[in-house]
Image (cartoon, rainbow over the protein chains, first blue to last red):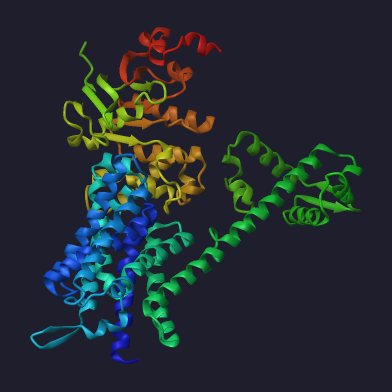
Length: 386
Length: 246
């Protein structure tokens, strides 16, 4: 690996981490769409900032553009408060308007400005190492690494300081407000950080893909854990993985780095969506199938408690009288045997004490919906997990 | 005999959403140490009244005092249990973590909860009979268990006044009894408890104080004095004696 390659991966990783952190809270607050709005609406801020500073990495430009992002949020809320349109409509009205102002500004001044719409939308990570930070002639590395590094440190510091405030205001706005942690301050704090991050990152990955870097890692992590801290850690890990893997994918395919990063993010999400241990699609389908078998099991056990006659307890009777397919009967019998709930002698099924006890508790739970007595059954049976 | 102190006093409180009043000129004086139900039909402004007292909603007129001072100065004396349905139970967190949120108020900004707060949270979970569920993800709890977690979160605040928004909504009978027993214990300990309540049948059994509300305040006082057909009819706009018996 040569120096620019390392630098590009480093920038990509820093951008990914800086995006993943606010992304977690945006996803949990069901505000994923607002990051899309911010990322587009900052365009006029960037253009105007560029007219003033002539430097895409200038802090003034970043703050100016971030302000446009916050203004977007305010405008969306104002429109929404009129109750004439819903939130998604308000978002759909605001950001194209601001974005188009940016597009017109660029087009009108295309001759004087080294800024084109393509670069804004897609970014170009490959060029990032060319823009160096020089301090009295000394090369301090790529400017965008410094910009994103500072943004990341700021984000991390705010996260550590206000973690509990962010958590409580995200989970329970009412309590947060009653405890004196103003949800409005926290909301706009998060919006400001998100805006600054988007502005800082857009140069590298573009206004469209920055949304993926914010939302996809958080959405993926959400399927993998039920702990907020772990969700943050996983989001960061997934973001960094996608950044590095995306870089090498682009290298091999000789294509856009940001496009490849997003593709990797999409693939990671797809894999997790399918295979996540408890929230994944396959696991949900498996659980539903198991629940069907468990319902059958209880039906069968109840049948056994109600009938002591041998002919009612014969294995073949299950197919004939309870009207089940062979496969299901077999599944149910196996499950009951595995749990020592029944014994089978000469093809006649008998309930064991354990089976009797299980049936009584299960029926009691189904009738009363009280789960104090069935806690021990929750580990082995999906049906009792509510 | 000494007059009991006023825990909550509300003066001329008016709250409006988009210029439509939902609470109109409410005066309310709640003495210390009562267990009070707020009753009224849907849309009567019961939850809004609590939220306005707690500063969650800004009133357009009037004022609120908690032990003679504005709420902002008395936050630590007050615990709040919002409606269970007002939060997303799929939020990635555990029962004990939710209870710990009750300690955030006394910690203030930036300071993080430590062992002391954890211990208090576990004790509160034990009080509501939920200790064995401490590490359970909150979406894996039943409705009644979620409500108990919310109650534990209020208990951990160790407040003087407890506001609870429909704590019996969607809970099983055991949880309802467990909750009301805890509320009665709180009253015994001299705390003031204000509950938005729906089930009129249980008002005389559970509460000793009641406020009838329907945008305007209809009546407030001891249950034995004012919980009668006259006030019920005024509040619900129908002949309540007939309705209750049906």
